[in-house]
Image (cartoon, rainbow, N blue to C red; front, side):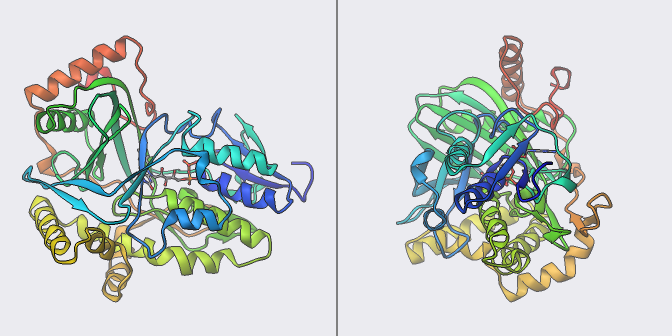
Length: 416
Ligand SMILES: Cc1cc2nc3c(=O)[nH]c(=O)nc-3n(C[C@H](O)[C@H](O)[C@H](O)COP(=O)(O)OP(=O)(O)OC[C@H]3O[C@@H](n4cnc5c(N)ncnc54)[C@H](O)[C@@H]3O)c2cc1C
């Protein structure tokens, strides 16, 4: 790859660009390679949430400390979220601070991906799109998911509904996981996450949309496109091996329970850059700062895999009771994400059974959370309303609307 002193990064997503910015600012020659034709192209306009409850420090404060410019991308703050219980009761989780910041992923100017790309370029990094490189030739591996542990499907639509977020725990609509509604400045997203592999998976999105249409009658939804993708959840024996740093989703650094990964992607990119600059040790830093949360999320995922709507309802009630007592809805949910001794025991006992070895991972001892099989209760027929939504989408799709996840999805006009 030419000059040996140059640093080559595989992947121009959040983790790769974060690392590139820190390194280029320190005067290093940095080349970032991405197989797609732009940063954010993996996502294409979906909204993602930066939760603000899992750690003591606010992520935006961290970003400032690391030298990132927050004005480079649009982030919309929410202090209140509709918490939608499995029996369709809707309550509000609320906080005096910030519950969520919603950012857009994709290739538009205001997305977080483009904001990070501009900062990497301004720092002096060179980005090569449509560039295929070998893992062995790169110092930082930041290329997102390899395998599939879970999937998420969503529809983006125009709406005149005011800004809003809904977070729904409902095992029928989102098997083992959650669905959500996000509306920002006239654009909405309804998304469902499947932590169990399904046949005819589009029926889950159609049924979820039907649910939101029924319970939010003022949605006034005009579909634009469908988005989504897969998530890869792994535990690695080594995060740095043979001089290579595995960051973001390439290192499995994500929340196994609900799939939050942006914060750890950026954080791990910064930590890898700091190691290369001789400021710290990546392996040590990942184990100290990130792994306690990842391991807790594995324990949470193990528990979630064992429950259904009855426990989800209990969780919602406890959350609301705690909020009433403390006046802050973030405290209860924050505790769920924080490391504790008993979660650490659950992790140790259950992870050998829960995770499967990946023999192709260059001897890094990667263990992946497999995409779980469907359960009997996942077999159901869509309602007439959901079928009408499927028909509506097929018509729009035939008219040229895009689906950004054809490779990851079973979406197929025949499967409706
Ligand atoms: C539908 C969906 C919704 C999500 N919602 C949330 C959310 O609300 N909140 C949250 O925190 N997280 C969310 N996540 C997770 C989050 O998107 C990821 O954790 C995060 O993007 C990982 O960042 P990364 O840098 O590792 O990968 P990415 O940001 O995906 O970047 C990887 C880059 O590598 C490139 N690439 C791939 N293969 C190669 C190759 N062979 N060579 C070169 N380049 C390559 C890709 O094109 C891409 O640009 C969601 C994920 C999905 C799929």
